[in-house]
Image (cartoon, rainbow, N blue to C red; front, side, top):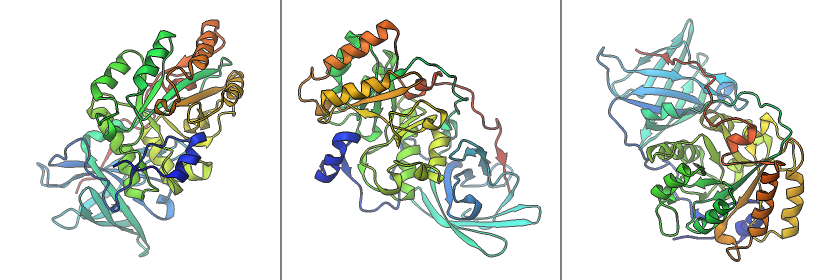
Length: 400
């Protein structure tokens, strides 16, 4: 069932999180979601592949039947661009369903008339947006239960300067081998962030949801790490399902999160290892649903800054990393105004006590007050996880 790629494993010894499941051959639908689809209004994440829409996502609540007033609901919901700017391209448009299925809509604002049409297979829509001059841009959407609207993440205010360096230990994949390591953390008064692939929870060799809820209650951070942790370069629809779908499933299991941790197994356009890759609609989706996205964009040796909230990287302390390399990274982590994530794959430790010397060093620095140790990457920026959203309180209703 599990397959390991030697090429990716070799690469992952220094940077990634690599227990993988092979991607499905057919990515036409991201697969079933944790929350059941209900009759009535559904929440959609749409992307329009051209023009002023290309770098944005569109969040829409669309009714699958007429409401009590005999109208089909088409509601535009604010999102964010990759740089955090509030965005709502369809705000102010009046929407009319052109057919009984509700798969063709005319959107009108003043003299501007747009036409959105699509076909649905499972929870995925594919179609096009047509402009007044006849220009057509491809479009796709992924449908979720309307409760997903509540998952739009709060934005962090600008970071407050703090010269004390901040350190976080991250445990990826929620393996059962984390149990011993977490005991070693707790014995030293340390915490960690546990990054969870939601569809692997409860499988043989992985933590259960009950266990993860207990971990959060005890002070550990528990955050979202995709759904299947696939080895894939994922088409657009699959990427949306793995991210937004993962947040849906975390909430459905009593562990809401606004932190996203990218699997190291992702490739191509979703292996976020440069600013160019996040200055896109994919970055807009991450910015809309996550306060912090831990990827590979900004290396650990950079001083902490607001831009790192989208693309924060890490230092790997397992996977064959030498003690010398870890000590070198530790010296960087002690620099003023630094925020450093130390990643551990516990199943790749050669022996359970392999990193005890590192944990002793972190605990001693914490006791001396020379560092702060936090349990989620949101706290790396000197802020609590729950802050007020910066998007408008009300959504724009576009009813027929």
